[in-house]
Length: 306
Image: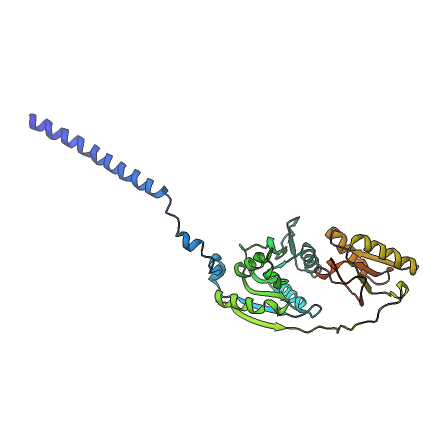
């Protein structure tokens, strides 16, 4: 009788013990599942010698990097943008909001739905297949057919060069068209090889020659299509007034760095439109990047900025 009771007690305790052991094992497994894994080796994460490793998504496919190199007014950016227009989807990345805005408008005017992303604004176009952005705002999360990186020589800038490096290494695109002076071609080719990408170099020559002019005798010698360059806002407005007084009926557009981008773009449109009376442009060196202008002659009132 006593033996029977003892056996029943063991039988009742054993399943409870097993249940407790199973519960403890489950808790242990669950605890192990939520405990984070140890971080990767800091030496690998902070290895600045191999920046191409920082963008593993872009390393999953072999890209073709096409370098359009040449001087101003050589058609290099035009050919890159034509490739962007023909693409199923794509992105443009440039150094200035003004350039991003110009490409945004050009693509939409050509029937290619394109959104705009800059540090100041977002214009999301319904059903857009393309995007135009400043270099800092370009997205590395999307897969593109064609990407265009403008003014690639700025990759050597001590202040903003990292943004061009990020875009060049991190964009996940079948083709990446980079445009700019030939100064950076060797660097871009070296980075392409490190990434395992193909590199193609296309060079361009100026479409129109540059010719030196004799010194003008006075403001009456300024003619339609001229751009007078000087380096201060006060001097720009003074020159504008002198030209309009010397040549009644002539109206001048003005462009300088502190003008809002929309105002600069509007002044450029006025100057480029024939027959509206705005035949002369007075500007600072702000016209050197971000504006396409139909200038016949460049006249320097000053040759030193500082």
